[in-house]
Length: 319
Image (cartoon, rainbow, N blue to C red; front, top):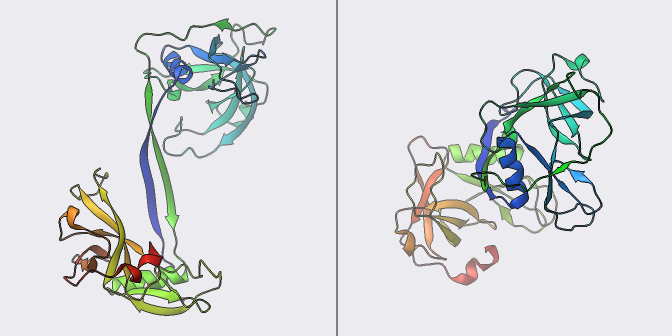
């Protein structure tokens, strides 16, 4: 039985966004231990605040301050906290309707176990000791049975002008996806071929096109593929881009060129970096060949072969 290949992969990037007046006031307020919501034209108070009414789509900027205490409306127990979650010990994810609000805020509840959590329980904000203007300024919620623990008649939230010193105007939120990739039969053959410095694709039995790397089925006809075809190693640059921003953990000096390369015999272009030529001399139709690093399991980059450029008609269908 063939070995089942798998590899852990991570997709990670910093997501940067500027804040409008509503989100700026909300996050700056958290830094100052103030929870702000926004009031709609029909009198509802939304926490966390949004910039547009989800019912009418009207722009809303009428800020109000709500209490740091509230009521759990629903919950789920988290037995095994993951990296980056609010708490490192088991906790409950809860939706909390803060006093004065009409909607619930999602956050963590620090509780000794699931038996200590119930819908309707009273909780309060536990503020982070160091705050910067982010949702993590609320470290978590905690059970509360002190003054005001019993919900009173709904009080009208106090209006707030949303002004603080040194307003937070933008945030950088890291986005990360950790997953394990397991290739199927077709991609396993492709990867095994690369280990031998060969590029293997599969031919569709219907349209006769050769796809590299193959996914085990023709993307056009939808039928299974099994006939293996070795392509390349040379190919043609069909289109390209000049990269001017250095990627994290990638030791390549910018600017450099990343291109779509149609390998000879293939009907689908694959990605590859172009080297051995100044970035501003790369062009469509350039003939290239792979360069393998010592011990590498895939081409490090592609370089010009010195052949005349390919005629546009020979690769226009793969743009």
